[in-house]
Image 1: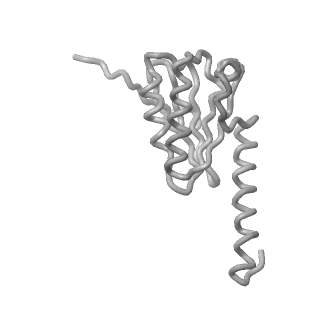
Image 2: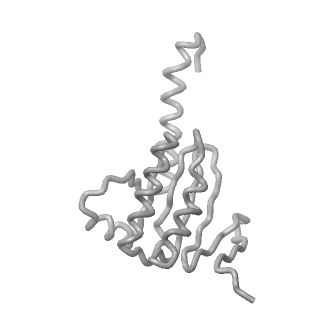
Image 3: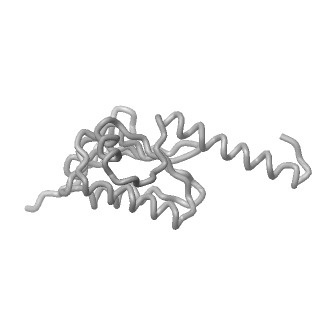
Length: 148
């Protein structure tokens, strides 16, 4: 009997976690954005599968936060995952933010100037997205003849 390489279990907070060959992926829908957290290692054996899971959460009109702060190994090929997510968000016209830890920050530093929307924390990303929503409302309310 063949074993299933994808293991799914529930974390202590109730969010399902999917294990893709050492990359543990969890998504949490927040009011302002969907937060996708990947921890563990991202290497040539799991990059494609992890990217597929992450891109499933690129939804119309819902920003996405990719939290890689707990990634312990980030192969150079994993930059493709970030570029693919950036492309998917661009195609869907969705804003996104990237949270990095030391491992991913070192990889980005040697990535020849790849421009990604890096933010210091999930809380900061959610705050920034919330500010954007408020700015849009402030702009639209006078056009609709209403006040906040």
